[in-house]
Amino acid sequence: QVQLVESGGGLVQAGGSLRLSCAASRIIFRINAMGWYRQAPGKQRELVATITPGGSINYADSVKGRFTISSDNAKNTVYLQMNNLKSEDTAVYFCNFASNMRAYWGQGTQVTVSS
Image (cartoon, rainbow, N blue to C red):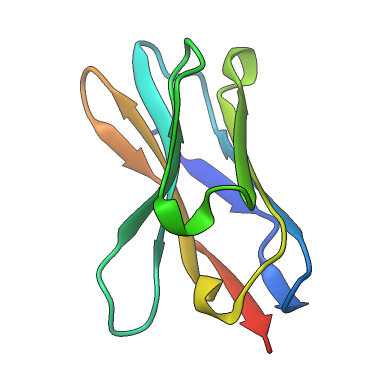
């Protein structure tokens, strides 16, 4: 059973930075995209950023210019560099790997931004 292991969440002041990492416990073949989603209390899960093995990137408008997604395809690892964090970025962040067969989700890591 493949697991996605996330790390890097925590508590940070507004304007600060955090870097999230997500690694698969074993190689997943035929990945179409890797990405990050987040869910704030009382809200639906929303897309933050995605990246394809070919390097195509998509960001939510709310994080453009502040967040950067990157990946190491050989290691099945995806990263999210978050700069200039705002209180509205507070949420549980989930990584996602989408393959031809199914989607895999991480367990979530809490990011809390204090104002």
